Image (cartoon, rainbow, N blue to C red):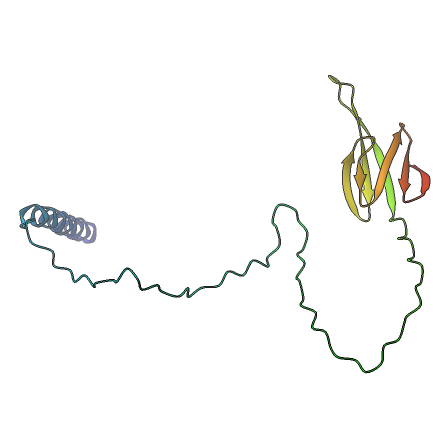
Amino acid sequence: MNSKFTRISLFVAAIVVWGLIIYKITISFSTDHNQKIISKLLPISPNRQMPDTFCLMLNYPDPFLGGGFETKKEIIPRPSTRITSVPKTEVSSIPMPQVKYYGLITNKKTQKLVAIINIAGKQYLAKEGNVINDVTLLKMTNDSILIAHEQTKKWIHK
């Protein structure tokens, strides 16, 4: 008896839902679509200019370069009472970043060589002559590469 009651109640519910759907469709077709739409238009004078109410903040990093962004700070000169000269010192050279050589890849069709190297914790695929983080790849062999940084050259082995 319980399943018979459930079946009848579901049948009645389905008829009510379909009846509402058909009622909504027939009402939408029977309404008068020729009603006038009244809108208020405000007169705008051609000489009046509205001030901009927005400001673009373009100081976000470039998603394609992967690097951060630099902000320009305005330097406000301050009046000083005493001017002193600072002796010039030599600019120290940038130390060579840590470089690891993992191996060599050869394209079978074009016979071009590509080295897999790690410079400062990031892996790169490089050809001879490529410059990455001020490190130039000069020569590649199966077990080592020759790199140059500023004035120094160094062989890196696997």
